[in-house]
Image 1: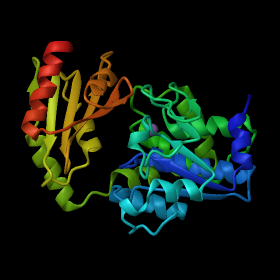
Image 2: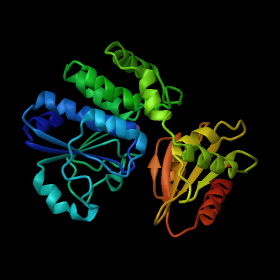
Image 3: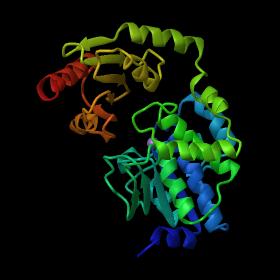
Image 4: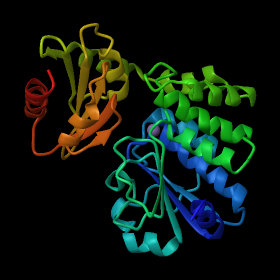
Length: 321
Ligand SMILES: [Mn+2]
């Protein structure tokens, strides 16, 4: 049974790579890095990366760079992409950087053959699950596979690997930043990846409106549980990157946990971060989600922003602080 994943990748002719909705640079990097790995071990396979077109603008530069191939034109409505069409066209479906099949873009109850992930809360939904909780990014898990196969890292691969490293460690600052991250980053830099260029593309592309909306969202941040919990809300009218906002409000010195509630069309998205040993993946699990101990996300259905905030504060008051 050893290295079954490798055999499966070798045999397949049409491979689809899926990743989570609202993808980040680790999701993109992982999908493309896996595509590179497959190209090496099975050069004749047709490999399609299927991405959520609702991604953030700053990722456009990355997607352009990866010269992405899609299964369908980007403007094909999601409902046309039925499970049958999808399953029939591919003899292997792999997922990267998603802890739950329900979070996969384009997922319609298809059988997922291989799941590669690094989330603690991984539901191991595939036939073969390659999960490494200790990896700071999903690209790092795939880098490990490349090393196991003794495939030499190329400049292109290094680019994809680095996107995940930079993005998921908050530019090498989060608690998941370790020697393994730096060792991989060093390999990338040696191959010519430019850390500042990646940083610029990922973090310095906001519009004027986004800066002002960000300021509005920050000014509405509230403190609860004797300042141990900070909560920010993003109504649909504001164009704010919840990840930037949550990383900003966590700078408050008394905050031990922070939450950002994002108003979506039919639910409230809850992003959570912990600055201590507090496990926010547990909190997220209570709110239909999951993630890592220090970074997790969930969903609240059938509530307004104010009601969702109340639920979160009540949960923390009762179960955490
Ligand atoms: Mn990730």
